[in-house]
Image (cartoon, rainbow, N blue to C red; front, top):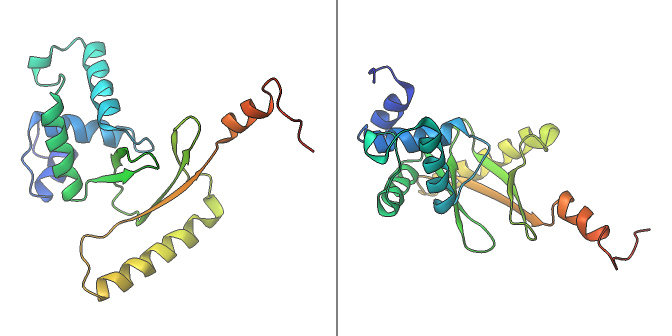
Length: 175
């Protein structure tokens, strides 16, 4: 890979080795910025992508073992390249951390357990949320806190699940 590769530059800028595994994981998450993955989901996605490319695990672009992936995700999270959230079921979810974002609002459905970003949904109010997040982080930094990020989780039942429940046999019709 060329030394001007943006993924290599990010890894180097954060003091990480530019290994094939690090490039694979960070590249995948950066290519899917609005999606958060559990460890198992990320491992499956990387395996599926490798199979679709016709690569064997030993060709450098293939699958990672479970422990290597855990360690790599942990390092990428520690240096701020990934955001780690723990959902209502205490499951860790990871996604690429946009450099300009201070708050990552998302919705967790308590029925289907989908995790959906809310930035597009909150379009008009996203700037207010970003300003509030920046103010909160600045106040904490002034108190000596370091390496901060803010996670805003909204939990409930998504529109798809709510619609399915209201159309289910025996469901009470709405007003």
